[in-house]
Image 1 (tube, rainbow, N blue to C red):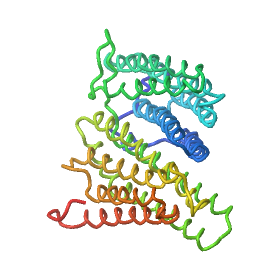
Image 2: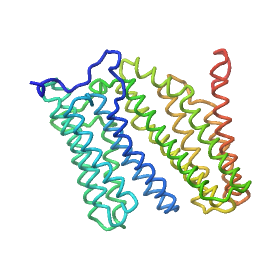
Image 3: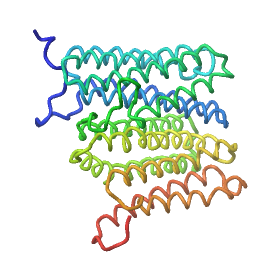
Image 4: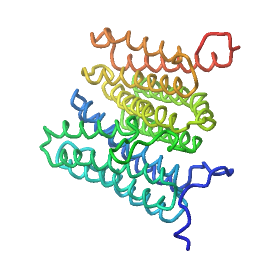
Length: 396
C-alpha cells in the first residue's frame, strides 16, 4: 500500500521546501568533482585544457542541476527516491574519478556514467509520477528522449579517439544545453511549458546557493593546502591573504543580498519554472566556473608568484571576470532590474583594463592576484553600501 502513495514533495507546509540531509549527502560527491576539475585545469593549463575543463564542468553541473530539479519535485525522504539518489551517487563518483583521464583512457567511463545518470533519472521520475497528471508524465517522457539523443553522442565520443572526442562531446553538450531552452520539444509529444515546471522556488534557490558554497569551500581548501606546503615568506603570506580576501569578497557578492533577493523572487513568482531555468539552471554555472578558475589562479599566484604562462594569466583575470559576470546576470534576471548591477560591470571593466599590462608582463602573477582581490572587495563594498542608500541614489 505504501508504494502506491505519491512520491511528490508536499507543498505548502512549513518544511515543504527544506533541503534534506540526503541531498546534502549527495552533494559530497560533487565536492570531489569540483576538486578534480580544479586540479585537472592546473595540470593542463593551456587553451585546450581550458576548453576540455569547461566542457567537463558543464557536464558535472548538468548532472547536479537536473538532480536538483528532480528532488524539487520528488520527496527525497521517500525510500524509492532515496535509493535513486544513492544510485546517482555511484554514477557521480565514477564520473568524477574519470575526470583526470576523461580525454584519455577513461573517456568511455566518464560518458557511460554521465549517460546512465542522465537517462536513468528521468526514467525513474517518469515511473515515480505514473499516477500523476498527464502533463507531468509527458514532461519526463520528453526529457528522457532528449537525454537518449545526447547520450548517443556522449557514448560515441567515449569510444572515439581522444583527438575526436571533443567534437562528439561538444555536440552532445549542445543538445543538453538546448533541451530546457527548447522546452524539450519532441514530435508527437509536444513541448513542455514553464508552467509544467512547478518548482518550489525556495528549494531551488537554496540548492544552488549550497553548490556555490561547495565551490568556495574547494577554493579555500586549495589555498590552505598550497600554503601549508610552502615556506612562510612575506610573499607567500601576501598571496595567501590575497586569496582568502578574494574568497571572502566572492562570498559577500553572492550571499550579502543577491542570493536572498533571488530566493524571494523565485519563491513568490507566478512562473518559478521560468526563473529556475534562466537564473539557476544556466547562469549559475558561470558563478561556479568563476570560483573554480579563481581557485586555480590563487594556487598559481602562490606557487609561481613571479611568472605565469598565457593560460595562467587568463586564469588570474578570467576567474574574477566570470564570477562577476555570472552574478551580474543572476541579479539582473532574478530581481526585476532594468540593467545589470553597475558595481559588477565596473569591476569587470577594471579587470579587462589589466589585460594589456598583464600579457605584457608588466605585472607579476602575485600582483595581479592582489589587484583582482581588491576589485572584488570594491564591488562587494559598493553594492553593500549602495543597496542601503535611499532609492534615489545610484544603482549598485
